[in-house]
Length: 466
Ligand code: ARG
Image (cartoon, rainbow, N blue to C red; front, side):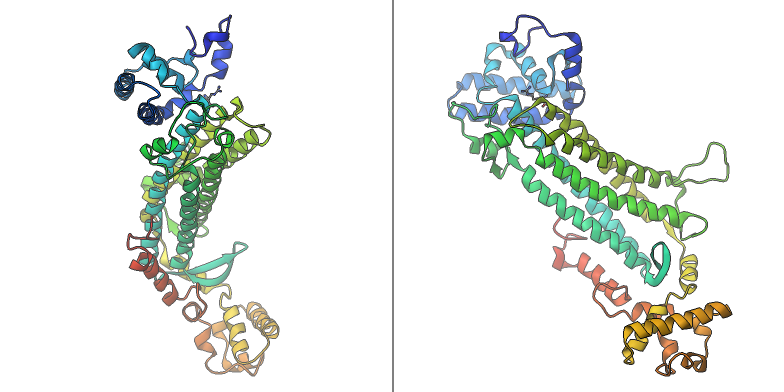
């Protein structure tokens, strides 16, 4: 069939080349944005008297019909037409005749595809922000519901100091809040209109880019036509923010997998979110969590892929850039599905208070509290650290806990230790004794929850603004 760009060609395109160059199989996903962009473009062309009112009317009606046909699944996309943009324009010309050929005045597929991808990402980033908000809410509710559960905090995956489970959970709230912030910031740079840059140099036609931008609700238009058609920073930035978000989801998934292990027994995962083994009848596997962890890898891959596509490209547009879409699309899909399933799952996770608290009792988790006790009595921290180490060593040798020691025994290590020591080395006093801002003391954790939920943060639930 005749290509829209066929004028200067004598031979027809090889079938293998058509197959190789076509992006239709995936960019068909942009059809709605492609039509939205064309509608705004036509209105601007009409306003600027670049095309007659009658033709603009025909084009708008034609685009509307195409939209309805696609929605009803009646539109026939053709692979030999290369991509979604050509498919729609071609259908328009067939529908309304030569007037359809006026749609592409003052624009090129180079600025058109950049526009479509930005419109797509703008929508999807907003959707992802909504899902992040949901997960943050679930995290805070869970923290609130389990405010009193004590557990060991870990460093090097070794028990370190007692903490509140709620404090541990809220760490993820903070990560997710930074993810929100990054995506909101990324959105500012996505939300810039490239249309009207044409192929790379701009156009001799008297277009009004600001008018088109207003119609498409872009707060800004691009300042350099060559940059506008060859920039994919916004897509890379999006995938990069998504990669960090996935890192956070993956760490959470990993922790739940470990905590669900029999040796820990800190959580019980809901049946509805686990799967069985095809051979071992006793098994209940944390596949949802494992897949979340595993899917993180593909998003990292997409980031590397797009960085690599872009790194050697001379200005301006190069066909290499067609390779931007699949990484972006798959990142969107992956992030959305992981956020959704984790948000559904979190409220159903049963935290095992007894196992967590029992684990927090063993292992000298309050040794640091003894050292800090000595510091408060005037001992330099380094000495206090050594003395406490000696206490722990001797308890381990005798198979005892610190709280088993008599005052006399304590004082054999340092006569700075007084009667009141018993009060400072329990798990509870260790937690509630934390004075520093951002620490695990219940008072502090409650204050953070209040701040998160409170009117000071916008009053729209966790995190406020979005
Ligand atoms: N399908 C192309 C892409 O995704 C559209 C732009 C084509 N531009 C061109 N000059 N061939 O990048």
